[in-house]
Length: 507
Image (cartoon, rainbow, N blue to C red; front, side, top):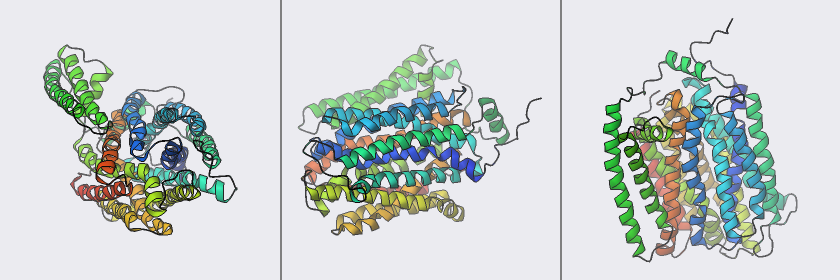
């Protein structure tokens, strides 16, 4: 006799939510070590400050390619490991290997390539975790589920960001090395991060359960949450849609080609070609999808991915704009805080000096502080959201984060950077939870993984734009002074906060 299912997703207890989120501790170890130390590794291996954004471009490009694909296939996966858990585990294995090798890269180009591999693997692990909350938790617990993820992200990032400083100040491991060599304090931090990443993800894989596709379909029907589903696609609809995509894609493609041609006539930074190349790629994908639909070749994943992107929910479109102006400043901060603080606050650009490396270590401490603040604030966000709303909560947090970024420009005492990090930490906690809590109520379970992956576009696209234009802006308008990238980021984050009020937040 088969076990009778509850009519809707049952509420999970605290430890169930803890276990299903614990893997994010390891994932954030990887991300935090990457964010706080990769610019330092690039500079040590000979990169100039203007070159750092283009070297970082591997990370957002990887997310742009990997996350929607992983989401699409995880929606359609069910095996002995489960639906999302196979992706958690295999991503963790390859990310851990990359973390071991990254600080031992013998040349700048190898380090840039290793960043690509590491970020791809982290993305494979991370993307299904967002969909995991939508799969397993009822709507009333999703804000708490994402807040729990924010907590583990904060705790993991605190420890990982502090590791180089701890190695030097507590364990006596050197934070300086000869020219072109990564200090031992950074190397050992990456080794520890690799082990923690794998073990934390393994814990979630072993301790969490997943609902199979039939159970999820039953929950969806009973909860009446499939309101987003469109009418079935007919041959005529594919034909009409294909024609539209051919026309729009053609316009975008021509625009991208014209911009690329114009760039060849100008003496501008080469990273701007990434932006025009992205426009060309978007147009080409639309043209290919349109041609396939016009030709009757509609039963394939490529067309489904393009059409679902076109038909994303209204709430998701509104959140996309907020995400753009939220993540642009984060990427500016991750790229430029080390260079900005060491030059603007510590007054040095010599990567072999004790003063530079002390400043770089203090940046790691500051990153640890904002992540600690995020971990503490995470559990207060559902309370504030209940008293106000999720969009108002997100607005308040983003404005505080923007003020925190702007304040770095006015600071000359390194200790006061801790105050700036408090505002940034509050924004970070909200960025990691509130948009996802608002999003999950607007998308069906059958496409949860895919749309969570697509939602990553609105994290990746601002990072790509930051990587392509920030180097140009810093070089041509601010005489190479990295601190102004943080000022631009602060203004952007405040704007994101204001735009939250446009979001239609309904479960």
